[in-house]
Amino acid sequence: MTTAPPPTTRASGWVAALCWIAVLLDGFDLVVVGTVVPTLRTPEEWGLSDSGATFVVTIGLVGMTIGALTIGALTDLVGRRKALIGAVASFSLFTLLCAVAPNAGVFGLLRFLAGLGLGGCLPTAIAMVNEFTRRAAGRATTTMMTGYHVGAVLTAALAIVVVEPLGWRWMFVIGAAPALVVVPLMLRHLPESPSFLLAHGRRAEAEEIAGRHGLALEAAPPPATGAGAPIRSLFTGGRLVTTLAIAVTSFMGLLLVYGLNGWLPTIMREADYDLGAALAFLLVLNIGAVVGLLVAGTVAERIGPRAAGIVWFAAGALFLALLSVRLPLVGVYAMTFLTGCFVFSAQVLVYAFVSANHPPQVRATALGWAAGVGRVGAITGPVIGGALLGAGIAFPWGFYVFAVVGALGALALSVTRVRRDTATVA
View 1 (cartoon, one colour):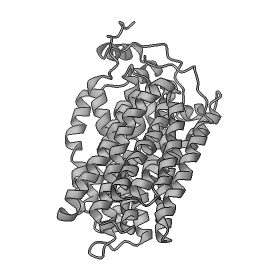
View 2 (view 1 turned 180 degrees about the horizontal axis):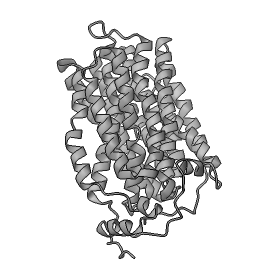
View 3 (view 1 turned 180 degrees about the vertical axis):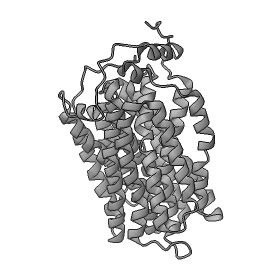
View 4 (view 1 turned 120 degrees about the horizontal axis):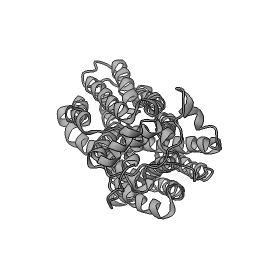
C-alpha cells in the first residue's frame, strides 16, 4: 500500500517537462509546412501548384492519423514510456531528412513517415501527464498543451527570421535538433505510468513508482485482454454515443486547427498582405492559443471540460465569422488573436474531457481515437482551404466555412455523456 501523497497538485517534474516538450514538437509540425509552402510555390524552388501545395500540407497528416490510431492503442498495451520515446525519435529522424528532400514527392513521403511517429506523441503525452498529476484533467491537459502552441509560436517566429535569409530547409534541421537532447533525457528520466502498470497487473512496480512520485493508487479494474480489447471497449458499456460524438467533435476541432495554420499565411498573401505580415498573423493566432489555453484550464476546473469546450467552440465560430470583416490592420490582429484564443483551446478541451471520462486501462486508446479521427479533420481542413484558394474565394468565404465547422463542433460535444465510473490515479 502506498503512502499518502504530499499536498501538491503538480505533476512529477520530469514527466511534465518531457511530455510538454514532446507536445511542443507537435506544435512545430502544426505550423512548419504552412510557413514554407509560400516559398515552395515560387519558381525558384519547386513551383508547387495549388494541388501540389495541398499534397505537401496534407500527406503528413495522413501519417499522423495512422500514427494516432495505432500508437494510441499500442500505448495501452506496451506502455506510455516506450511509445513516447519511439514516437519522438522517429518523428525527429524523418523531419531531419525533410531538409535534404530533392523534390516534392520525396518530401511528401518523408512528411508521411514523420507523421506516423508524431501521431503517437499527443495521446501518449496527455495520458501520461494526467496519470502523474493530482490536478483536474482540464487544468492538467490545457497546461501541458500550451507546449503545442508555444511550439507553433516559436516556429512561426523562427520562420520570419529563417525562411527568407537562410532558406526553408533550415526550418526542418532546427525542428529535428531538440531530439538530440530530449531522447536521452527521456531514456534516463521518464518513468512508466503507475496507472498503466496497475491496469496490467504489475502492482509492485506501480506502487514503487507511485511512491517515488508522491501519487496514491486507487483500485483499477482488471486489464482488458487481447490486442483489440481497448478499442472495442470504446464502443461498448454505454460508451458508443460518446465515442462517436467525440469523433465528430475532434474532426471539427482539428479541421479548424490545421485549416487555419496550414493556409492562413497563404490566404493573407492572397488578400494582398506581404509575406512578413502574413506570417505575423500566424504568430498572433498561436499567441492567442497559448493565452486561451491558460484561461480555458481555469474555466474547465470550474464548470468541467465538456461545458467549457462547448462554450469555446461556439465562441470560436463567432470570431471566425468576424475575421471576414475588413478592419484596420490592428483590428485584424486583434480578431486573429481572439480567434486563436477560442478555436485552438476548444480542441484541447476535447482531449481534457476524453482523459477525464475514461479509465486508465483505455485512456490512451480513447485519446488516440480522438486524435486519430481528428486527424482526418486535420487533412480535410487544408483540402478545403486549398479548394477555396483555387476557386479564388478563400477570403472571405473560408472564414464563413470555418465558422460553420466551429458551430458543428459545439453541437457534437453537447451530445456526449459524462461517466462517473472511471478509475484514476488521484
